[in-house]
Amino acid sequence: MTRVLDRLKRPLGALRISVTDRCNLRCGYCMPEDEYTWLPRASLLSFEEIVRLTRVFARLGVAKIRLTGGEPLLRRDLDQLIAMIKPIPGVREVALTTNALLLADRAERLKRAGLDRITVSLDTLQPDRMAVFAKSTHHGDVIAGIDAAIAAGFTRLKVNSVVVRGYNDDEIVALAAFAHGRGIEPRYIEYMDVGGATRWRSDDVVSREEIVAALEHHFGPAVPISRDDDPHAPAERFRFADGVVAGVIASTTAPFCRDCDRARVTADGTMFLCLYADQGIDLREPLRAGASDDALAALIAHAWEGRTDRGAETRLAVGDRGVLVPLQGLRADPRREMHVRGG
Ligand code: SAM
Ligand code: SF4
Ligand code: SF4
Image (cartoon, rainbow, N blue to C red; front, side, top):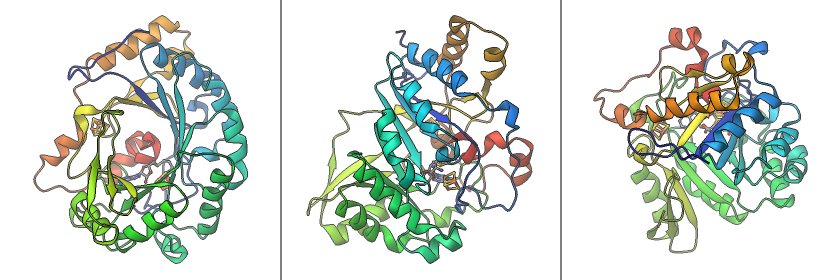
């Protein structure tokens, strides 16, 4: 295994693989529009192609794989892909980020395939809110999906909630109580001005300070948990007086780019070095043109070694922040969308 460092001495350690750009939800902070430009079907990587790239990334030091989307459970036979990725030398962990709408029927198969961890995105406990904000009446399926994952034996579950002012900021405590009651760790994500968040306004961001204050008000004083065992983890974790442990991902008000070891590959095989990057690196073309593993490894290593990206920190320095990518820009290049990059 070769260790690859970028220009800021950050190792390449984790890979988020988006397996589809399609989604069965329309969260207001991610896919608020009525119409989208989809990736051409022929451009989507096959499982064999994804596995080949994963092998090459693992050779370069990637130990953690996270499957994402769009909604990854919309990709047929995802459990087969997991079973193919899991034995790759160097891969220590395979995780999934999902909205859980389709999880109830799949949880057991995913567990059997070797999936290590699941993060479920759940922003509200109120079905009518989800109907308005994410345009889905299937809130009950999400809860059933979470319970099925617990029943299937997933022990390191997390529930992620993006907190948006005026939508779910009054549910911070309720979401923690829901998760804690099921032995799950709740995590709160600050609303980010990533591509696709065409309704983003700085006033709608609920900051880490506000989130922790709301939790402390209910659960008692917070003590930060050391990140020594996982220095590249995006969440800051806190233990509250009555035993609740919660994480906050302060990507907007206190970004953590200096520790970022994550590369991303979209469903069409484009590598991104940062969630905020304008351009990606096409891995599909060389892959399909017959490039050797060594040639692909050299391409990826070269890109990573030139990496200086600190997207969220750079955005923080912008005084009057508006929408990052206007709608025309997203239509022209859907790879700038969060639901294509995979979050
Ligand atoms: N569909 C799956 C899901 O929602 O879990 C996986 C893909 S989704 C793009 C991955 C993560 O990105 C989710 O946890 C979602 O909440 C987060 N996300 C999307 N748009 C966001 C935004 N504008 N700010 C912060 N997080 C966002
Ligand atoms: Fe919501 Fe995830 Fe779908 Fe985006 S990709 S709309 S965050 S479920
Ligand atoms: Fe990493 Fe870019 Fe996110 Fe910073 S903004 S943490 S560099 S992906």
